[in-house]
Image (tube, rainbow, N blue to C red; front, side, top):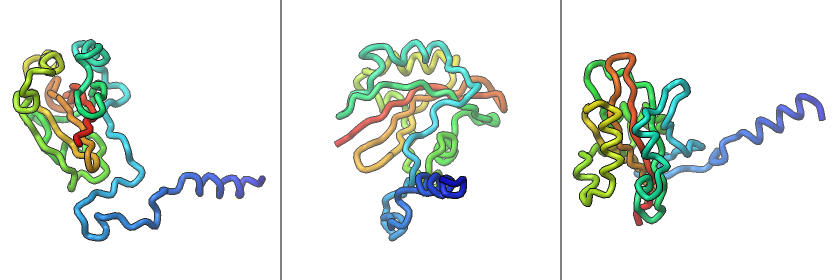
Length: 175
């Protein structure tokens, strides 16, 4: 096989599988075409997960979000130049996690008390609050598709250009 044939093979293998398929969004529907992107960014190289969050993520029953899927909480640690304003708005958050369409992302900001009405995730919220040294804690609900959404329990750590967005996230299947 020549180098040119091999490159053609690699190009074909790396094509977007939805290429040529009309999405509901392109046809004027409300659905979002997420293309090949399937995971949101939760951590960045060189950004350390704070100890309180690392401690609760992966800790038995505490670290699972109860839904139809019972998915584990995962640590969140991202660079966030908060510019003195604290936590990001919906579009900024979608951009930060590398959502495939930040301007049209379905992001809902919630108070932790409203999100955790039964007090089931107090240990997660407390760990996030500890990591943020008392900074405001918010929950971002990010819709993925029909019945799947992710809940991000986050706060800021530090100020200005040196700040980080830290916390925990979990996938929920809500049928």
